[in-house]
Each structure stands twice: as C-alpha cells, then as structure tokens.
Image (cartoon, rainbow, N blue to C red; front, side):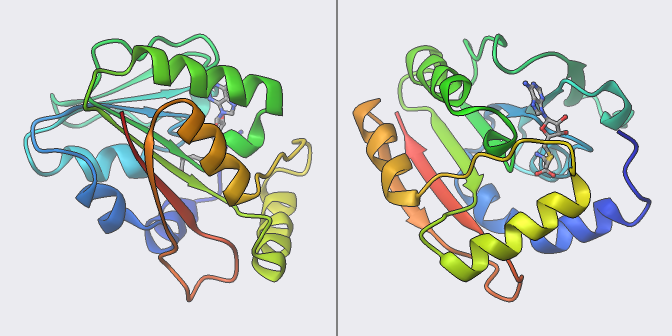
Length: 187
Ligand SMILES: C[S@@+](CC[C@H](N)C(=O)[O-])C[C@H]1O[C@@H](n2cnc3c(N)ncnc32)[C@H](O)[C@@H]1O
C-alpha cells in the first residue's frame, strides 16, 4: 500500500519515539518488525551507535536506507528469526495480525531474543475504552481491509510475563486521540 505523503510526518509526531529510544541500549543490534515506512527504525539508527534492520511484508512501504547502519528487508514477521538481536520493536503491528499468529510471534521472540535483550511493543489497549475506539477509527481510515485484533493491556502483560519477560507499561502521547500504550519488556 502506498501511504499519503504526510504519513511519515504524522507518525513521527504521534509515535512515542523518545520513550522507545530510551529503552533500546547503546550499540544494540535492533530489528523493527513490521517497520512500514521505517519511522522508528530510522530514529533509532541516528544515535547511540546502533545497527537497525526494518522488516515488512509490504515492499512498497520500505524506504531506501541512506545510512550504512540502517537496512530494510521484505519478509513476513511470522517467520522472521530474531536470533542475534539485542532489541526487538513491534510498533502498531501486532493488531494487524490474528491472535494465534500474534502469540506465535511473541513466543518466537521470547525464545530467540538474546538474554538481557529488550522487546518494545507499542499497542492499543481496549481497557482504554474511548481511546481504543478512536484508534479503531484511525485504523479503519488507514487500513479499511484489515481485520484488527487489539489486546487488553492486562491480558497482554500476563502473556508477556508467562513468556518470562519483565514488563513495564507506560502511556505516553496523551495529546493524541487514540490509545498509545508501550510495553517495555526485558528478557
Ligand atoms: C500500522 S503499520 C506500522 C508501521 C510502523 N511500525 C510504524 O509504527 O510506523 C503496520 C505494518 O505492519 C506490516 N505488517 C503486517 N503484517 C505483517 C507481517 N506478517 N509481516 C511483516 N509485516 C507485516 C504492514 O505491512 C504495515 O507496514
């Protein structure tokens, strides 16, 4: 899908980029799963000596990288291996995938991410009733054909804990009319 020209600017305003950045270590090898236009991947690659790979199924969305430490590959994150990465990002991706596959992806990350590695998930929380309905509206506008599968934050936290992650939840970007919930997880 080709996104409108203002999309990247809009994403860079509404995404909690500083909060994501704070939780990705210096010098980390990072994979941004379902990176889309690579707004998060590009941001993380600019500082702290990181190497970043963005992965997305939709080749048309992937940008041309301008730096050596930033690459993009077309692949399906349901089968992509996260072995050898220190940090994984899932920003507004999980809810575009059905629940059984979401669970498989999370189990795969829990199994293969390096010990001490970080997983940062940006998701919608159905527990935020009004905000999650507003998010559903935005998803309908941008992705009318997608089946959307949002989590309740408490249930997702439980699953991540069962997968042996230490989980912290924060809610940045309160000005945005939608649910912005960050799950900061450490293996
Ligand atoms: C809402 S966009 C989020 C893009 C980016 N992470 C961000 O926060 O700006 C969701 C992205 O997930 C990608 N996606 C959905 N299912 C995927 C899959 N199975 N494998 C790889 N990418 C997938 C879509 O192509 C789309 O680019």
